[in-house]
Structure formats: C-alpha cells, structure tokens
Amino acid sequence: MNLIKKILFFLLLFLILFAMLSWSFDALGIIDIKATVSNLANNTPFVKDYLITQSELDSLKEENNSLKNTISEKDSRIAELETQIEELNKKLAEQNNQFANLESDYKSLKTEKNNREARLEKIANIYRRMEPESAAAVIQELENNLAVEVLSRLKEEQAALILESMPQQQAAKFISQLGLE
Image (cartoon, rainbow, N blue to C red):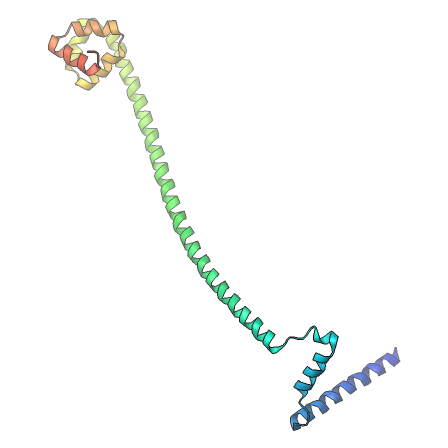
C-alpha cells in the first residue's frame, strides 16, 4: 500500500513538472502545444475517434442555433395555441351558460305548458258537465283562442250540441277555427 502511494506521488509530480515545462515552452514560442497535442491526438487511432474537428464543432454549433430557433418558433406557436385554447374555453363556458339558460327556459316553458294543459282540461271538464245551452252562452264570452281550445278538448257530440246552441255566425267562426269545415 505504501509503495502505491509513492508511485502515485511521483506520477503526480511528473505530470505537474511536465505541464509546467510544456506551458513554459509554449509561452516562449519554442513549441506550439495546442498544435502538437492536436497532431498527437489525430495520429493516435483510439483518441482520434473521440476528437471533434473545428469544422465539425462549427457544424454542431450551427445545428444547435438552428434547433434553438426552431424551439423558439415552436414556443411562440405553443403560446399562440394556448391563447386560442383559452379563448375557446371562454366561448365554451359562455355557450354552456347559454345552454343552461335555454334548458332552464325550456323547463319553465314545459312546466307552464303542462300547467296550462291541466287548466284547460279542468275547464273542458266543467263544460262537459254543463248543459249545451249554458256552455254555449259562456263559451261565446271567452276569448276566441281559448274557446276553440276548450271546444277541441270536448267529444265531438258535446262540441256539436254546444255549437248548435250558439248563433250560426259564432258557431261558423268556431268551426272554421277548429278546422272542422
């Protein structure tokens, strides 16, 4: 173990002295270290495979810049698309609100229609129980559309008896509106 430490120490000392000597020769202009190391590396087959020439380095830098530009363009496009997505999400939320409002309106109209239908059916039941002359007198006083709806809910025989009890002109008007001509 002690021998290995001595060998490593002398190896390290040798490398430091060699580096200082090489740097000194390079500073004095005696040896161009950069060119010498480059030539030595290019002539060593194993090392040569792992070295990059200046033209390859320039090509890689150019490719890197091109990729950076492409990334920048893509980032810009992504930002634009994200903005469009936000706008579309806002529109979708608005449409969902409108749809909810329409659905609510539809439900209220349907409820209103059902209530109206129930009221009309009650009114029709009242007229079913009345004598035709009395029913005719009351129906003549109703608004035309309401009178026609009530008459349309009665059985044909009942409606016919009520219409017979009305003046001909009024009965003809109701028959025309009922589409029974």
